[in-house]
Amino acid sequence: MADILLDSFLDSIKLLPFLFLTYLFMEFLEHNTGNAISRRIETGGKFGPLWGGLLGVIPQCGFSTAASSLFSGRVITVGTLLAVYLSTSDEMLPIMISNAVPVMTILRILGVKALIGIVSGFFIDYFYTGIMKKQRNKVDIHKVCQGEHCHCEQGIVISAFMHTIKIFVYVLLISVGLNIMIGVIGEDTLANLFSGVPVIGELIAALIGLIPNCASSVIITQLYLERIISAGAMMAGLLVNAGVGLLVLFRLNRDRRQNAVIVAVLYGLGVFWGIFIELAGIRF
Image (cartoon, rainbow, N blue to C red; front, side, top):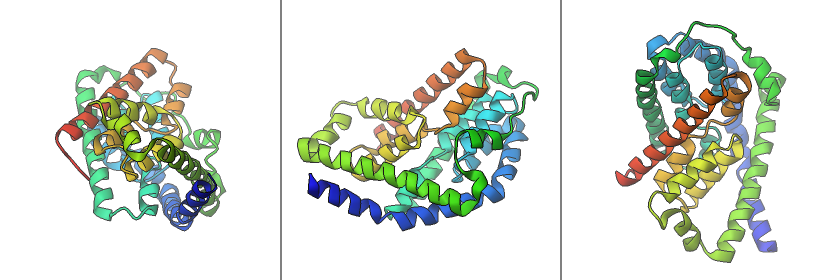
């Protein structure tokens, strides 16, 4: 146990400088381009899913919450909302960068997520065009941000530091848990839990991804980097991982049935595309 704790701590501590630099860059983007991107999505009209899918991959922690608030005010369509949810990556990007994942691998994953978001968004809007209504009840995203305690008003350095410490703790705890599980039941046995039965890996990963907390994307990314889950399961989990965007949706949108349908559709799309990627033999 002592060796497991020491190894997990040393492996995690190595990520700190890379995590901080990555979050510093992300906070810079958030503070300098966030409003412009939100306006682009807001004015996208029938091309909203295109802009939602393309701009959703830009690493901004509050983008899914902004999309949720815009949808709650009936400023964007449900297709645009889902395009953002599917393309956004939450904590995947900093974890992969910190683990020195090849740039082309990261770009392929982001590209596939953006494409899936765009295609799915247009598909959903094709059947649910009536959801687009006149603008009303706009929400101040800064108030939402403050409510989620994301430290975005304290400057980019403080915000980046807080994010870094928070994710470091998650990575450390998850690393300890994974190392204990691997030591007790073996890496092959753990991997078989996800890949032993077809489709099960995608179903489980998507359920984990729906958890509205950044820890879920950390878990999925770590499992993929440890080669415990496949590319299809990884994509299924990350596609549905909208972070606190889902919490904001349920908080601001009063139509609970509609919220439940959106979550169900998001889960279904994540599982479908995860299975498709696995059956197609797509690797990153």
